[in-house]
Length: 290
Ligand SMILES: Nc1ncnc2c1ncn2[C@@H]1O[C@H](COP(=O)(O)OP(=O)(O)OP(=O)(O)O)[C@@H](O)[C@H]1O
Ligand SMILES: NC(=O)c1ccc[n+]([C@@H]2O[C@H](COP(=O)(O)O)[C@@H](O)[C@H]2O)c1
Ligand SMILES: [Zn+2]
Image 1 (cartoon, rainbow, N blue to C red):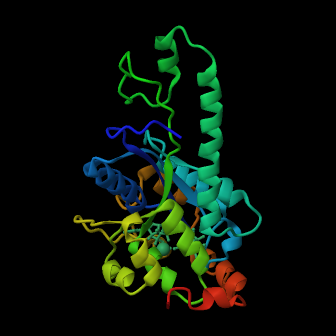
Image 2: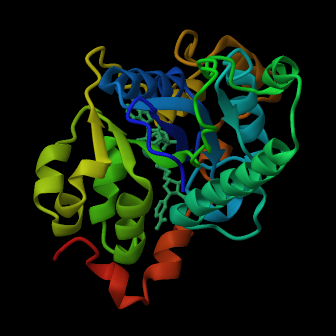
Image 3: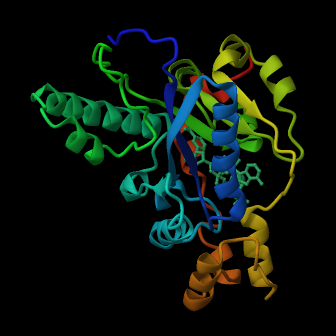
């Protein structure tokens, strides 16, 4: 649809899905690492990051209410000018496949784009004023004789750690068609995490191998294996979590006494929603073994 411009960079929105129970400094680092990676390729421009905490219907053991998890994520990103929290997923009454969350955000950008181009259709005499209203201040100012460039819709890529990518291989957790659509239509950005060997994992899967150009592996050299599990464990033991999560998040957890032995028992004995949903579906049982 757009005039091809070799200098024009592909715009990317990064979407991170997960429990964020609670959000940690490492979750925030994922976004910074991915953004640096894309900008270093010279081909992409990361315009936004979205954190989408999973809803309560996910039924993971120890998962505290989405309300608190969303609030903490919002506190944590208050000072970021490009990462935001979206609570659409967490407001759904049922658990949603990650693919549906990706589709939703892509769709949302599409409709925003239509609205924008409708606005653009109105003749604008004072270009200067129009510019100011645009959210993207880093766009180079268009040269006079250039034909108007129709903005293409940004790609929404799933941002995750290597453990999430490797979870594609867990029986009954993911549908092969979902994995295929994620890597085919959207793309994946995977940050290395201690204990995972993603390259080998991709090599051993035909679908992932086929779409490996759309799977971006980012090496984290400043390794830091903070995890929400370890944060909750420290809290149960009365140990400090300072400098592991943003200070506003630490204060919020303390004020509301969010994590305890009791909270860790939430959903105990329940089956994780995706397992429950896909267990009877033969397509998901051995998703990657072909
Ligand atoms: N230290 C880390 N390195 C790389 N990726 C990470 C790291 N911590 C979290 N992630 C990624 O962040 C996303 C959200 O993860 P999640 O909410 O499960 O956090 P977590 O720290 O893994 O929590 P938990 O210990 O409860 O599983 C996932 O894609 C996960 O792989
Ligand atoms: N089939 C699927 O789409 C599928 C399966 C398992 C987990 N997930 C998602 O991956 C994330 C995993 O988060 P946790 O690592 O905190 O369990 C969640 O956002 C969850 O919804 C998606
Ligand atoms: Zn995790």
